[in-house]
Image 1 (cartoon, rainbow, N blue to C red):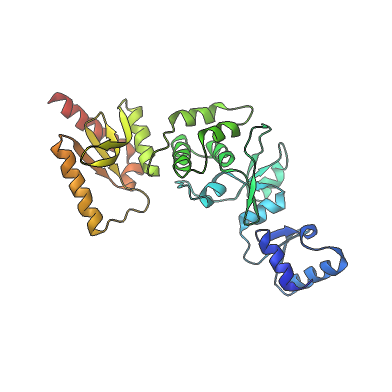
Image 2 (tube, helix red, strand yellow; image 1 turned 90 degrees about the horizontal axis):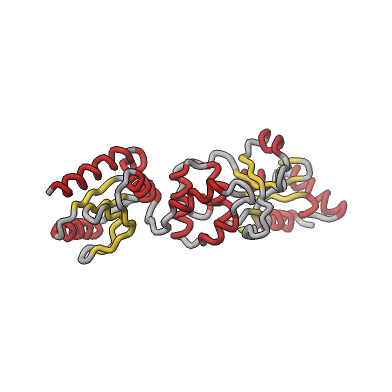
Length: 289
């Protein structure tokens, strides 16, 4: 086996694999040892080899014999997350390897025994769980509003369906997932929009996400039928045309007697309660008119 063949096999397996999956026989083992000695590959564990630039999460999953899950899978799938993925999240077979995971700096999750759970797969040779399973695992790792926002985004991106998330729930302890699903809308345009929707609804306000206003178009949130709340997403970039269109929409909304309130990402995410207080003040003022 040539070094190029060996490197190609590693690349097909996400950059990390066990000896038995890479080579056969003494000749292959000698080629692998030579590649390691030359620095073309690195030995990252007993019988485990990786490309020099292999992602640490892939190495962690291979070392533990598990699959990537939770925040690691969601981030790779484009789901916006407020919490950072500081360590790889790996799913193992039930009741397996808790001490190994603790030593290796990995957040461990255990596979559900439910026969209805979505089937896992491989992306670019990397073992991972289905997105619905990753969301269920994320419910245990994230604050509730962030878990709701993650499911909202996954539904909007069509990565999952509600039925798939329901099927992925563990046989026991389904309540946390059910509580999150009860708050999910699925139409939110951004993570902060979900945060604001949840906070306004918790304050007792009637909130219509992605409401269509005649002459204006869709607005992020229509509160009590009289206050339009627009929330900037993660990467809000407004060119001159978009800026002008926003102002036209605002004027059209005000012409119909609606109040328009615009908030930045930081105001929506980190100043949520102040935002709610301001919206409450405006709805109360309109009610008194």
